Image (tube, rainbow, N blue to C red; front, side, top):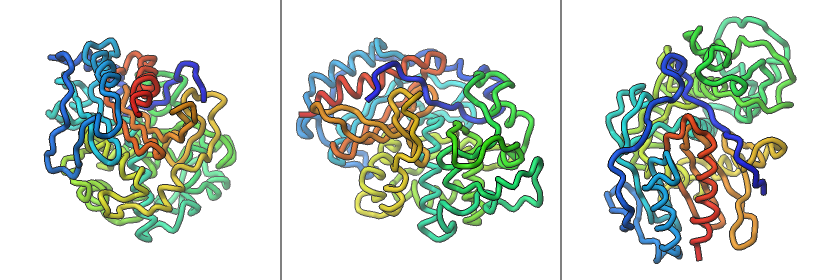
Length: 392
């Protein structure tokens, strides 16, 4: 397991507004934070069974110590903490936060509902799996460009015929791309430039020149996930948001998911989803339970298994992640001196979901650490030194 500081694996919502507004300066601090007093989460009839920490095997003192550091902002910039054990919601806390520029993208007025940034990618991946399960897409081996109906492309390269949907899901497209060298406030950032100068973001991505053979090299690419969303919408023949509601959100009693949209009206699948934290935790439980939510199979177990195969080795450069799957980061954490397989979604500012199947554990965080990415390491510290240690 890697132990040096986390190189933040994140990507901002791909909208022109990022460049215009300074890429995350809003949300300086949550308001009205009080001392933490643990209570069992309320049962609000949203599909969660609730329980308390002690009944599900936690040392409540360790969790209390962790949460005192969250609410006092010794662990700063955390807007919510959600813990699920044994398919029961055992901790749910969210701050009375300030609404910020990201909320403005969808006119969100609900302080509980939160932008997920790049954690949205993992939800878009789930929609791919559902489209495959329902026969709209044959498999991840279909040529990626065959999922679009544009009559022609700029800078055509025969290698584009060889690019598969799997190459897009694992960010090994081979296209010329760089969204990590420059900040998301700069037009030198390829994501910002693409979204600033183009209306159809999927077409703009597909027009880029090739620099490597597909499937050979990982290059983080939010625009690729946005294009995957367009590919799914093309294949299913209905708006992507409607498909997500009907096949994923509504069956999990998630009724107020909202997406930021591209200039063409497509949900921004790479970074534009807003959910409440207890709904985000449902998504983690769905994966832990092999695609079933409270007994209803929403995604095939085969897709879940395929998603978390360690397809791309990134251990040489990515702290806290050993590999990448289908839009999930894959790693090991330590419990009882043993490595435990851990699936992670990672979103700009601290929108993280941790799934540890062997412990029947799901933990979700939202946050506002947009200008201090080093604070994301606190989430891993909380997982390792408090939450995992607290499990008896």
